[in-house]
Image (cartoon, rainbow, N blue to C red; front, side, top):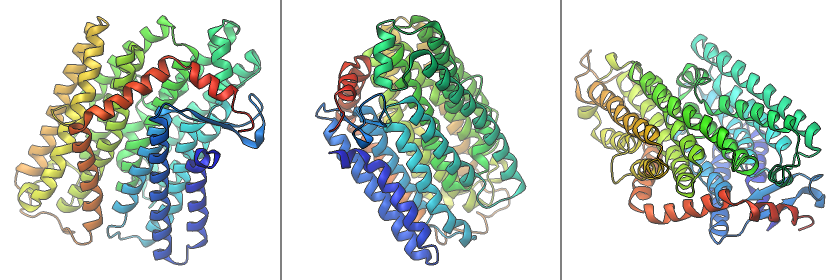
Amino acid sequence: MNTLIVAPLLIPLATLVATLLARRSPRAVTALSLAGALALSAAGLALVGIAAQGQILATQAGDWAAPYGITLVIDRLSAAMVAITGIVGTATLVFALARDDDPARSRDFHPLVHGLLVGVCGAFITGDVFNLYVWFEVLLVGSFALLVLGGGQRRLSGTVVYVVLNLVATMMFLLAAGMLYGASGSLNMALLAQAFTAGEVPASAHASVVLMLTAFSIKAALFPVFGWLPASYHVAWTPVSALFAGLLTKVGVYALIRIVTLFWPDASIAHEVLLWVACATMLIGVLGAAAQVEVRRILSFHIVSQVGYMILGLALATPLALAGAVFYLIHHIVVKANLFFIGGIAARLTGSERLAAMGGLYTRAPWLALLFAIPALSLAGIPPLSGFWAKFVLVKASLDASAWIAAAVALVTGIFTLLSMSKIWNEAFLKPHPAGREGECGAVGMRPAVWAVSALAAMTVAIGLGAGPVMDYAVAAAEQLGAPAAYIAAVTGAGGR
């Protein structure tokens, strides 16, 4: 069982090493990379199967009991996040098989992706604050290299913004971790949860948590510290921007959910602040998207607005709201990565990412029109797709909690999201191409990209039509988050297992 717990770390790490050793053979690198991503997906799904039975897995590295050992924990939420990480990682690697004009970029891409996946999975399964910081550092190193992959002035400018803001957040996180250790004598999340619940920590520990949550808010791109995201994601190579769009802000959201539910489950002031932050994030993000004229800039601002929905569930903190946040996490990772993929395909077929220079895609590629419509309508919350159920649950939870303003903001944000998606549809698909052509590249070599997009679109439909089992899982995950006694017991009793 311990082997399965560490599999989300060992698989991408081993794949990283293998792809580096096989760098002289591009085919071997590709094969090893895809095999590693599929193995990570399989391990994640196996963990979901175990977690669905209500079992929480925990282990201590080297049999050092908490708080001295490195703690790894798998519950329903972390298992789902590992599984969806493997699936989106696999889709990204398949998409990258599409013909690229820079072979060196494709060669370097594979080991860097698996380095990123190590950090992402580590953040999802770690059980102590310091190692959460370590895994954030690992994924940031991979993301820095991936973002600049291919070079170019525009890409470098976006990378500088991304690096500076994320390094500031990382420094804040490290400072907060040091303050928390000095105040409590431990960084193990389960032990800290016990201490916070019992009121056995000084005020300085609470101050360190505030600083930590601020750092996570930057990484999650919450209002007002979201500007780095729309300034950087749209400049990356399409597979990179899609992977980032699907996963990176969700690591920040996951950290917020984990820390708040463990340390401050009943902190009404914190939940009130998060509620207003969530509302502002939804509105500012969607209004920013409405003002953009490039496909991936629009989609980048929509990441910001959609993160607001997830934080809304955390802020309300009712079992139904937390279930909605979990459901929204799963839904959004798939949908947002897919929309970035489709944006890249559309730009290649039309020769531009600017809406004014695009057009004719409905005639040129009707298959792409269908593949775009599925995630776009899901993002806007149109039934019966996955986004509808996620939004429905969160709006209902808001109404149940008498959070009328939050419910109204969520509904208005959904309407503006639909308008933004309609703008892309009208400009890129319905109107004729302004130059009377559909681009110079055509669809040559794009078959793997279509496979990846089709698979994720099918997942979106499947989650929507099969929302019952997914929601049951999300509700059970929310119960674990809302009552962390089982999590604490699994960690404090896991030494030596």
